Image (cartoon, rainbow, N blue to C red):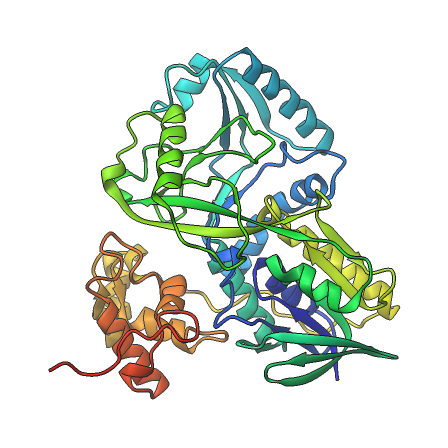
Length: 475
């Protein structure tokens, strides 16, 4: 029997797994997908919010503000890209200016630091390419950008290094409450656990309703995005928001930690929780709204579009609590934006819930650092030469767009929670993330996966189960 089973290996589940791995507990992290971070975590705006937007008296506001300053230390320990670039909320008229005042007041009550309201000219001095029609802006210096899937993968890896078990392609079919815990029925057999933590994202309501009579509903909301080439990644240097509405924080124009430019998302309630298709009319809307903030965005430099689905709770706020009628069952549900920003603080809180349930749990030797990741393109010429002398595979360039080597890909495959698919390699080492989107390097990545996993090329998947790329030889 496990002490703790965590359902869902997105940013929340992996953070909780890593924080619980500090203690002498038998822990299992499971997910129905083929990889860690394969839900909302792999398709979002990748922003660490300052915390001025979520209501100061909400869980969203509390955990956002508490979580924001935790990222510097965590990303250093896990060797994950993170930059504090700051954000601007733009005002275009008198109503927007009043909204800025409300956001500033709300942020102050929440405890957000390093905020100021600028006039239009001051905003232009900070970001030269924003609209000349801007009358003012709320500047928050603590906002940042991050690699969200890279963080989740690093968290899972570090959790496993500290004793956590990981099971993928494992879907929860049913849960039965026992006297001393829960029996979890999965497609891979039954699992017993004293504590069950629900981090199932858009499916968290389904899991909750297997266990508790205190029902809630998760409303799936799809958001679509443009990703632009690195050649235009410096069009803006900060995260550019428009004033938020009841539909969300609106269309964002922001750089990424890897030097691209990302634009989106829109907000659309959908029926199918797995619907990540993009639609031309929605993308057209995003483009029109974004150009209000930053005119003359070079959309001819788009390298891909994508969509993510976020979990909107019908309660209007994060659901983070032990179910009243189900002792030992902890919901961590409805974690929409600013969920990524709040994630380390949420994990800290959930660990305390586990401690309360157990009475006390013993700490063990915990290593917070994972093995550093070699990023060949960022090395000096001298460092590259020295590395290639030690391992010739780092002299073999597989992805020309991103200058990714064979050595980096092999490392991504063989780490804990390592890559097993083409997109899994892409999320960890970035081949296929450049302007050709894998047009040249895809066959080479497949060859390396087949070789290292001792599989035939026809068995290599793009991402999820059944996503085969090859069906046989043509010549």
